[in-house]
Amino acid sequence: MSLTDFQVFDTDLSTEALEQYLKSDAIAVDTETMGLLPQRDRLCLVQLCNAEGQVSVLRILRGQTAAPNLKQLLEQTSTVKIFHFARFDLATLRYHLDIQVNPFFCTKIASKLARTYSPKHGLKDVVLELEQVELDKSAQSSDWGNAANLSEQQLRYAANDVRYLPSLRLKLIEMLKREERWELAQSCFQCLPTIVQLDLLQYPNIFEH
Ligand code: MN
Image 1 (spheres, rainbow, N blue to C red):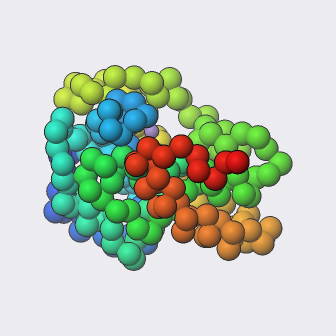
Image 2 (cartoon, helix red, strand yellow):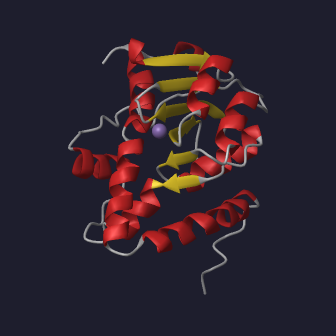
Image 3 (tube, rainbow, N blue to C red):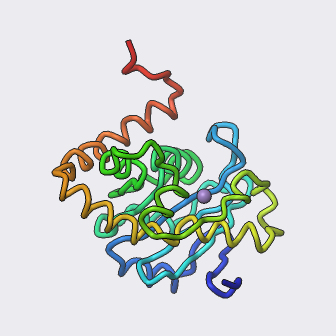
């Protein structure tokens, strides 16, 4: 795979790319940040991929507080946004770009409900089992802050994190329906925005004893 497999944008999607993605009924989304705390760690990249495998990588600037085209896509109700561990991405997109992602699908929640025979629900594990592809996660913990000069390895890693999600979603929905767990999965997705809100308000786990 080469760099030509995806487009890189600065600060927001182009109108042309937005129009293209708005036609999709499902879009994969991932983010790369400086760390795990939205209040401390800035958002550096947002990656998108449709079912046709068209990947876009958006570079977000330090201090940037809006991306109107991205917001339009992520809030469009006719397009399901697919994440792996949506809890984090929803929080960082809401905190930094004021985006209320809706509707969405989380492949990690779906995997935990569908693949109860396995303790492994990392993206690498799920992609290996359901897509028979070995993901290279070696750039996972890297400096995403230098977005203007990302290495080819970083860009390839960022693109690969969204590439398999549309297919994973379809396979997981099939498994969830087969095991009669699809409605439970949908209930879990429905309550996630509340959990994200609690995370952003820095409440501890209020459901614990
Ligand atoms: Mn990622």
